[in-house]
Length: 640
Ligand code: PRX
Image 1 (spheres, protein in one colour):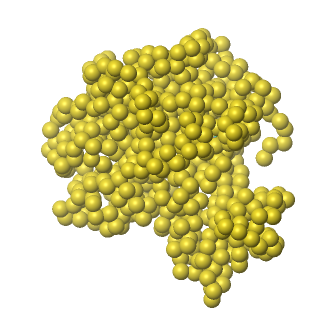
Image 2: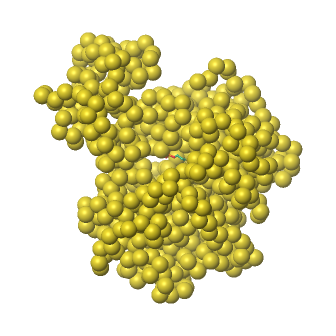
């Protein structure tokens, strides 16, 4: 994609931003000199504790680290009550718009009322401290209300992205043993209602643990309401009591579970904590996006992903800021939708994913040019490496050459930003620059030695780190702590440049980033092998100019079956139904064999060599070295 080496381009922060930035240069030094002291200070400044914490970090049982132990707090109290009791009471908390143009501005006072009422609704349906509540919802204010209401009563939410299939939803409900499901009658995609409730109904068939389902009326979409199980949100809210005293939660009480993909077919329930999470999401947002009282912050992520949790809901609301939620596609009714909204809502900070930026770039600069974007002050990107060409386009065409770009590297597991610029750092297109103050990250080789190119690791615990994998401590140990001992292994490759800046090069495991969405190759493979025709499947990521990468499936068929375009369509449909349309392979190649070692391990790197058009790497360990010729031939005559 790149023709020139852009590493040498450095952009220095504008004077105006430097002068007023929340972050000061000394903070990096302070945090380096006393990492725990720095986090202690952040906790005191940013979180209202009911009972003060005794210890900043309890590291007596690594890697099961606990932050701010002894302290108690409540997340909804921090996000809502303390602003309700301040002069932010009538400030816009959530600005919302859907594709069809419906708009809501919810002040902190209104949010307080809604959250309290919904906490009472949940309580009246039998939800208590520690119970799991599953959300399968559009990007609507009720989703934020439901998340906050869960935290108010001490229930643990598990938000499942609305684009996942009913099968994926059921799997996540069952793993978390959730007893309540909150959903909606649908939401709009390019003007057509999307059948969320239908998917939820199918999921509940396979998830009998769900006792009650709460449905938000959002799309006026005809749906079935299952008597005794399904309840309308607005009806329950109409009679709900107006105040619920926030539960006093231990600092390390589980706050939420968020499922993400790993190296096996089974999604992992990443479990986050209460106080540590709340400290880091606020500190990062305050210092990286430099939030000021009058800012309007627009993070385009869906609440089904960690970015939506940390930087649409919890971070901005805990800081008492105005957060914008949009439920819709980027090009409806036209390709300037995002810029039209940014101008109209007065967005000052805009945070999105490289895949969206590349899409805007493909559409052309005439769309942002239709609108006045001079209110923008800072831009951000997340989810996958950004190619310098897209970075430059974003910088010039959206930021008008004056808005620094915060390329934030982090993960579902890290909860908040880890490697990221702040507005006082020089930035370069394509690098997430340096660790945030108080975060210790490095690039190491196989022997755990610092290297210019290698694996990205986190060398010491951080406040918003995952606590474990829900119900599976062993998997937590295996996935993150087995490779480099006391260093957390991120699963990413990275290199370091002469300025010490970190360039994340992408995943080194079997995880794909498709349009920034995280998918496991094993999840797609196991759905393919469920089809009666399929003997084996190997899925890899192929580079894509817009989506970053797309899944490509190599499939061997059982005896008696033949590849055809009908079969390609059938297999793609099956992946849609089993995992979700985001996981659909862009192409399916039928071959009579897959490249395997003598021990039966599929060598995906050889398949990647084929799809990227590279010389095939070392194939000497293959059980059948002639297999590659056949696969290359099958790929060049490519199906579907
Ligand atoms: O590969 C890295 C990539 O996204 C992965 C984490 O995915 P997920 O848990 O879905 O969280 C995404 C949103 C935080 C990482 O292991 N990634 C994320 N941000 C960046 C990135 N790669 C390069 N640059 C980034 N800024």
